[in-house]
Image (tube, rainbow, N blue to C red):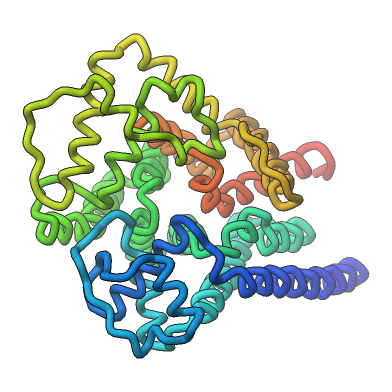
Length: 424
């Protein structure tokens, strides 16, 4: 009875603390809602154009002008004209924001509320995942609290990046597999969540297929299920590339037309010296065109991206001596839990600490016996390996996976506590 009473007191205290922290975080996000200046504002811009014109593309107004319209409260009455179709960004976050604008109103506070609600649902999914993995008592309580106030979430929920939505679908994907394997129900959620994850951020394009493959190799998934998951996920993801093939008039399988420049950021002569896990996305992708020569003709809205990809392949072919050094540099950066370019702030310090613990637990779990969490951990490792070699990695792009990373940490804690502290 005393343990139950103490747990109730702990739950009440941590719930109040969580409310306080999330309220403060929401306050900061509200105060800074007009002050973005990069990718975050591009999502708002695309969503505004989509909801006002019905076309996913760029308009006759600049990004700063659209933000000023939100500041002035004139978006609803302003007439916007579309200039062209686009697919520079993955579609799900702009479409989600556009739906909010269309259904509720043109006010950025509604987007902030939506992100908070997603996080609250994500907390519940994490809590249920812990219970399904038989993680109980204090570890369940403290683990749920750690997820709720994660520095990773706080950093990216204060701006309009896609990471909070990516994190939600990452968690939904992991939860849907755990739930199905434990209860043999709602199997249709798995490829659905996998597709939504990839269409929120293509950085995770290898993750679902790595998870399916590892589960099958570890005999936790039947071959027929593997085939169904692969095919269903691929077909659902392909809806967007099919749209792009039609409106951008290209024969390429394109989720985003930024894929070419993104590859170029990770494959050029300066990667070995200049690439870091905090500024890899700021690299000069134009470097790949040095000494580039081609008679190929690229057509359609994805032509520029295809030209970048062709330049990357030509760079690799001409610089075979740089392939392994570049790969080594990017992999070292991807798995380094500490920022290679310093970032100040207590949240950044908290994120570094979290990533360091996560890396240690990821290594420790390799020595454990076969389990569902071990399959997840291996899939995370291999998917990170593949995407890093293809493009590059970085702290921001890895942030949505804290759902799984924290599960791995808590699983290792449970294993070691039961093995070395609690006697049978």
